[in-house]
Image (cartoon, rainbow, N blue to C red; front, side, top):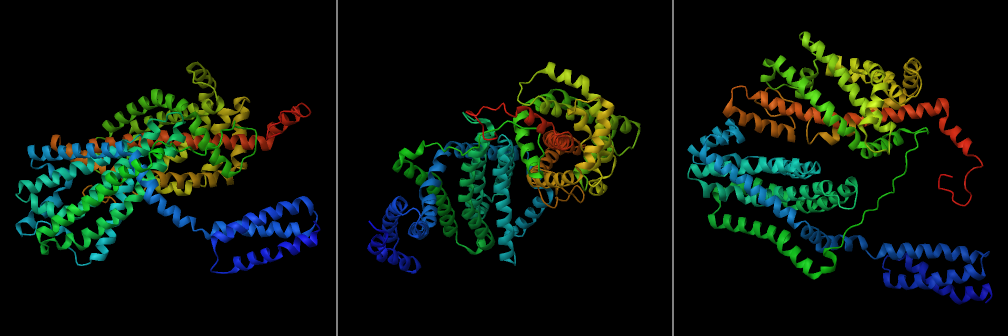
Amino acid sequence: MKETSFINQNKEKWSRFEKLYESQANDPEELSDLYMDITDDLSYAQTFYRRRTVRVYLNQLAQRVYTGVHKQKGESLKKFITVWKVSLPLEIYRSRKNLLFALAVFMVYMMIGVLTTHMDPDFPRIVLGDGYVDMTLQNIQDGNPLKVYETDDQMAMFIQITTNNMKVAFLTFFVGFFFTIGTHLLLFYNGVMLGAFQYFFHAKGLLITSFLGIWIHGAFEISAIVLAGGAGITAGNGLLFPKSYTRIQSLQLSTKRGLKIMMSLVPFIIAAGFLESFVTANYQNLPNWSKWALILFSFAVILFFYVFYPMYVARKYPELVDKEEVGNFVQRKAFNFDKIRSIGEIIADSFRLYRMEFAKFTKINALIVLPLIATVVFLQDINHYNLQLTEYYYDWASQLEFMIGYGFRNTQDFIVFGVWTFIFALIFTSVFWSVYTVGQLFSWRSFFSYAKKRFLPIWLGNLFLCVIVLSLPYYFLIFAIFLIPFFYLNASTMGLSDLKTGKKFGLGFKYSQQHYGKTLVVIFILLLLTAMMMQPIALVFSIHDGWRNEPLIRDILDMTADFIKRVAQIFTDDYMIWSNAFRQLIYVLFMLGVLPLVIITMAFGFYSEREKTEAVGLRKEFEKFGKRSRVKETNVD
């Protein structure tokens, strides 16, 4: 067919599409039909009119048809509805054992609170605080036992309560990543507190009164906490039971599953805040039947959405119940240390290498470093026993000062400070050995052979950083950040270079100066990531203004340490010792978890600067020149 005949035969159809596409009231089905016709025309034109403009025109037109079809069908809204109708209920059904387990352990923890309060009527003062208990006793005497929920500004109360409930629920989920331990701690904390609270009112003969007032909003609020605990356990189980995936891959998949459940809780958390602010606040004006009706309706909604409807969807779509989600994981590539890395590559590769070699350096740190630290910290707690009887404004800064000894209050502090420089050198040695033997199996013989040759050079190269970071008060560390890069690569040069020690010492300063700008940016990125990751658990805003006051922003460490403090009050007058000892344990584990990542960035910084100076990788490529297989070339080739 001649080109002119082909155009005349189809131009009305093409013109129809252009008008239809520009129209606001177009028909998606007609667009779909046109798509089939025009792609056929395009195929014909590509065969017979390859060098003609009609082929270009039809190619552009087909792209517009494709865009129109996928734009006009409203897939986003349809997919959103499908998620809430099918995908989310199925995910809840798949996680039903974890949700049921969270409910069971929460009930056990609640019974612990009930039984403990039954045996010790003063137990609510431990979990609720003296101030809250005394206020509630006064409200009971005034004839308004739940006066705490009354407020003049209900909208402000709604925002505050909803924000707090959202934080507690997502914190309960988030800390499940750490082998579900954090989730159990928060479920325990809330369960014991709820049990003690309800039995406290029962002892005063006000169980029904408190139940009808509290559970107006508590049906949604407590259910959300329990379900968030189930979602956290679902996420954490990915790390505990990876099946055929790596632990990181399994955690990624399980986190997505848990997040879906968490997203479903948001409306209920908002509803709980609304009920607490606008309904519970006026509970005395409501007849009892309306309270019962509201509580039963709330529980019915929860049961329908998280029990009955998921069972219905699972029976309706049995083929989807056991359908396992497959992650789109990128295949791991071997590390090429002989290359110049950008800042982004240093951070990304550091995280990847951290995951790969975690088991190797953690085994050394757990079996050698941790017992050493425990011994030193125990001796320091005895040395500063009187100072450990209080809670400090910046608790983490004070505790690290006591543990490491950089307060230099007596001779033992100076000795302990010196011991800590060797402890840090041992941590650096374990990580540098893992980098040096990347991909190899763990071997004590290999590690001790490496440490025998390089431990003292690493200690010497790391000494400058230790003096700067450990000897300065925390409020000077912000300014010291700009000094740290001058010594950042000293230890990695000592641990990874094969030169003689004397030459490595000068080379470390040279590489550190050359890498100054990148080091500074890497430090700021690591600080930001650490603050974001650790804030729900501990550290960043854990600030106290006297031991009786709550911190500015409570985290899981504050909650747990506060609970330990109140329990220890029963048994000893020196109860703060136990609370501070628990904080020290968390800080040590945090240090052993984060410091290796920082050390790995030093290793990549060293290799990057070595490549700039010596071009080791480039020379290796020249040696391969002309020797590559022309049949089996890799993507790199």
